[in-house]
Image 1: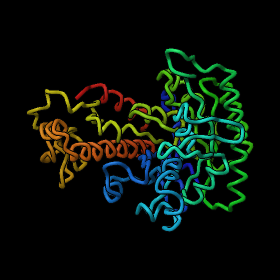
Image 2: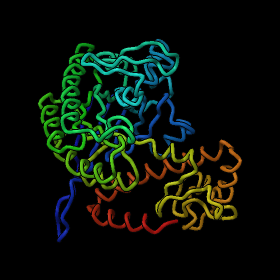
Image 3: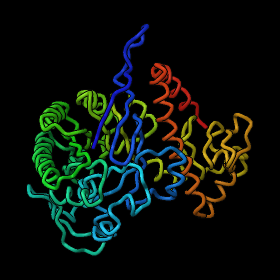
Length: 400
């Protein structure tokens, strides 16, 4: 089941040019999602370093699971015994699973892509395995994902390594895009054959070529998927190229269906993505960067490993209400609250390799991303998204 309703848009008014931003609500089998939304990534059936209870408390409405990795471990027999991924990982809210295409692509020399699918060696035990559009849909059906993604070929920006390879040509991007379209039809046929009652999204490909994106988009729209994603970004291309495709493609997708930009990105990418018409985002940045000592804040990014934080009594973000910044009170430092954990303490944890450090960093970063999306939704509800967009950029440029 999928029902999507656009509640508000961001039209021109009083000298303001407007944008493609929209406020919506997405109804799925396991719950309702307010959009625009950021979806935390839970590769192996868990968002690293965060308990499901904490995710719920910080406002996570939908999370991701990884088809490829869950197929490898623990395997479908285990997950089927629990009735699906929701019960297995104790998450009762919606789950989106990727198709496994990106992970297969990232195996490099360990895989061989053909029209039928992908032959590869398991990175776990070396077993010879095969993933096709049909197999991907079968796996995701067993997981009982609320949103299922078609298997696509993730078109890389580079062919080979930068020293010996080349930037993907138009001909190579077209060949990849056209195969993804054929795989989309096969994914859709298998989804229908299995009687899956969740929702299947098609994925727009075409590399960094707008006219190929347009062809992919039109063909997928004719297939009438319940929702659409823009794939093949954040695959090594320059930021300018990613922003160019982000500005071109999402708003051209059907207005009455949800739009998902895969694997993006920074806080700036999210806000600009909303302005380009995107409803759904995911990215490993808030969790991965947390494990590397980088905190996202309203006033820029903070690297806790820098020596200047060794004796700093302030919280990471004085305006933040997360547990790491404001403790149990939830009152931010700027409002007179007492800091939950000081920068000095978090610096100490990082230097000592204590696991509490990345746990607190992950809580903070995910809270920041989810709160950012709440602020965007509030601004769209109030008709002030243009002002919010300017204020956000100015605050992020201040530095911490």
